[in-house]
Image (cartoon, rainbow, N blue to C red; front, side, top):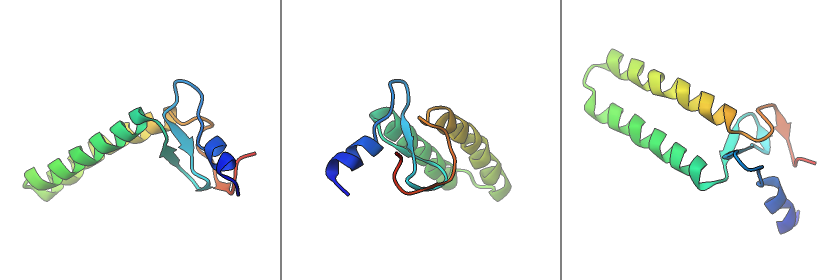
Length: 89
């Protein structure tokens, strides 16, 4: 495995913020926009977990922000989501 292979594996076309994971299902943020989206999502989840008192409301609110987050990540992943086991060719 060379550094050039790793660099190529995490390149995305313009307009995409995430690259498919090398192993498994899902995506990895590779641009500042992707990292900002993940950071904002984590801040929102931690804020809800801390300041919403009722457990049922907390779960509903976290689900309500998780669903759009997953949809945006799916739409902004270059190559889509599918099972991967190793380097893209």
